[in-house]
Image (cartoon, rainbow, N blue to C red; front, side, top):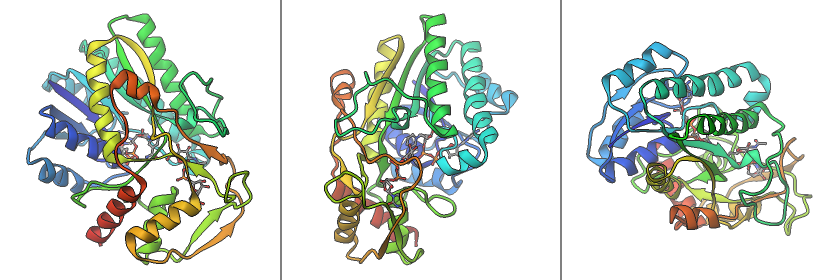
Length: 333
Ligand code: NAD
Ligand code: UD1
């Protein structure tokens, strides 16, 4: 079975490629490196001890994309490629809408042209936009996200839903990730964002490594036990394994399914700092700063649908996540 992985050089894509290769799948990888590095491809091959074809193609370039489908018989697509920085999306909405939505439309049109009608799509818990002390389940009605990045995810889910309605042969599994974090245990692949990280754990890792001076904790006056924001951090290797389960499901069903990927456990910013200090043996200097606009107090998953439908649940805990990030950070120098 041949799986096209768009955005396969990225953080979650690279870990999923590794799992696919180790699971015996043939993969074809596409990326334009807008937010990743070519060296990651070699690391994937090193971990899995297998080689794979790679195309340096932008989803916006229809002809180049079509060439992949002409040259390879693709059975299904795992679609990671997209821009993902919330603040950047507010500053450059046209770029985000064009890249994420037009890119997906091109991909779906060409998939349909070649009779390839199975997709696993990277959505996000950001589509819920719900602040709740209860775990969030898939039945919750998404609110229109406040930023262009979130809007692209919700729009793409709806576009994929309409495609499935129009043609009952299509099968789409949209996975709503909570907060992906961690790195591969080899220390060869992980998250190394270009520029200053937006997300908490990559930022903390750079503070621990002496690349950034101190963390700003965005608000300690939320209605939570220690006043800081609570999130559901999920290990990227668990997340990658969920994609294999979702792929199997996509081959056995049709229509669109939307599934949360989280652990069901929430941790506060202060708990994350303490866990990273334990894992790294480093002190994480921080200052309390004003709340970040658009942030929720609490957001964590009800992961029961993933368990019942995909037979998947997260296995790695917060300490493993922090340990693997620290190992990766030290290896990359
Ligand atoms: P990432 O930026 O590391 O990976 C995305 C990859 O897509 C990058 O390698 C980038 O170069 C590539 N890409 C972007 N636009 C492209 C285009 N037009 N053509 C070809 N390649 C392109 O991000 P990630 O963390 O691995 O996220 C993967 C997916 O999961 C994204 O769609 C993201 O929005 C979604 N997601 C991520 C998170 C998270 O916190 N990491 C949370 C929820 C959802
Ligand atoms: C952010 C995005 C969300 C996206 C998700 C992907 C925003 C507003 N939301 O969510 O759309 O789907 O990433 O993982 O950007 N924090 C600090 N200091 C920092 C960074 C973060 O205190 O330097 C806090 C935040 O306030 C939050 C927690 O850490 O309470 C997690 O933040 P982050 O990693 O950015 O994830 P989300 O806010 O969940």
